[in-house]
Length: 124
Image (cartoon, rainbow, N blue to C red; front, side, top):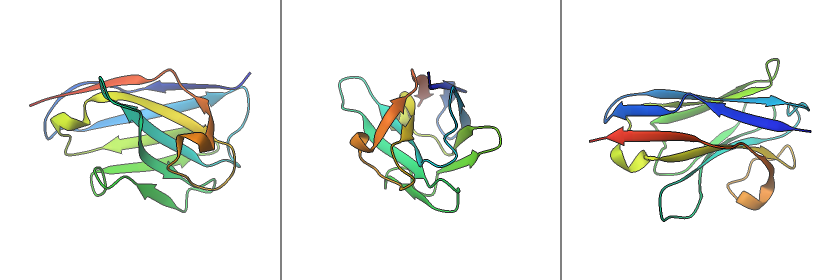
C-alpha cells in the first residue's frame, strides 16, 4: 500500500521560510512526477509545484515562482518544498501528490496518490 507522509509545516511570520518534506513508502516513485498542492479554507485545492521523475525539470504556479523550490531525492523516496519569503496568502494545508506518469502536470487528475496534508500558517 503506497503512502505519502508530509512533514515540516507550522506557524511562521511573513517573510520567513519553511521546508516541507514528503516521504513515500510502500512503493517507489522514482519513475513518477511528483507535485505539491495546497488548499486554503473555503477554497479549492490548487497547484503549487511539480517535478519530473529525474528532478531535472520543474514547474511552478505563478503565485510562488521565485519563492518556492521543489526538489527530490529518489534514493530516499522523498520530495521537498522549500518555501521562502512566505506571505499570509500562502496559508493553507499543503499536500504532496504522486503522479500517474513521469510527466509533470499541474492538474489534480494527473495524481493518484495523496498525503494527508500539513498545515502552513503565515502570520502577517
